[in-house]
Length: 452
Image (cartoon, rainbow, N blue to C red):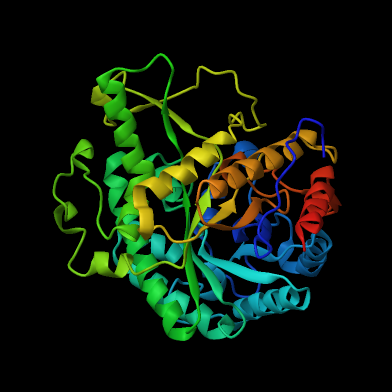
């Protein structure tokens, strides 16, 4: 461990050590074995959407090389592996006819993981919506939530005898805001606040999928993975308008997706011009009961805090502005500030806000992009610092059950293409060759040292 890394305390004996990936980012095989197109297949083939025109057509070729990747996980000593299931690989049109070859692939993957002593933890939706459903309105269309519930039932019927822990959605805030609000991710719609129904329909889909999973898998543990951020004011921003802006941003990024899950109601959205709690008919009778069914765990994806000030131009349509921190933080290759104590702040803040309604927490993503190469001391320091932050939160009473680093492999990083390297394992995208980095060895040794 580098000298700058803190010495970590011992975690509980049953603490789960894992790593995460996502289907579109690593699988490749974009049109093999009956798979239908997803919104990311369409988006990446549209000129000007992704840096240097990169696509996920091949990515890490995990579809053909998953045995090699499971062997890497075994070398790491992982307890669990979080991956995502590609909806259009199972239901090429989003609904109706099931493609058995898609289910066969995930069955092979799950069996390989179990043979390696690694618990499979699938995420059902990690942003690769079938294009056929987007053509009918995507997550703006309430019917997509029902199709998601049906899809969950199909996957659970095949894998539910071997998979217990399930994650329904990944980062619904990011998918709503980047995909439908600002148009920088698939499907590329720039609707600003008109994208808000996407939030409700994703959460309704979560509720319907939760019911389907529990019907098919009696001992199912159901989670959702929310990207959450502690909201901070800049040191030079302390006025009432700045405080109101920070509150508004906290509502949009955090509470819009946590309150209905944990408290059974939405926060006050009047700052966004939506004082009607039914959102003009978007929220219907019974929806919040479905959404608020008790969770077995809350997944938290954390990368950095958000700094907020009052909007410089209130006419622009949003009640806040994103700002840069005044503090000179270290930065990742993505230019994200490295703020480990923000994770402690986030976790203890969730406990303070939700109290007994907060289920056990799982860190379902945490990691950093660093330059290419096998020597990555900055990534080791990042991981050690954030694990120390998790330990600090646990010492303050937060029930954290496991940690999944992002990511096992270098991968297709959405609008950045292949320019951001998050992997414990370096991938040569020309040949597909995998080379474990120094952080791979560090994480392996950490896991081994934590074992009883």
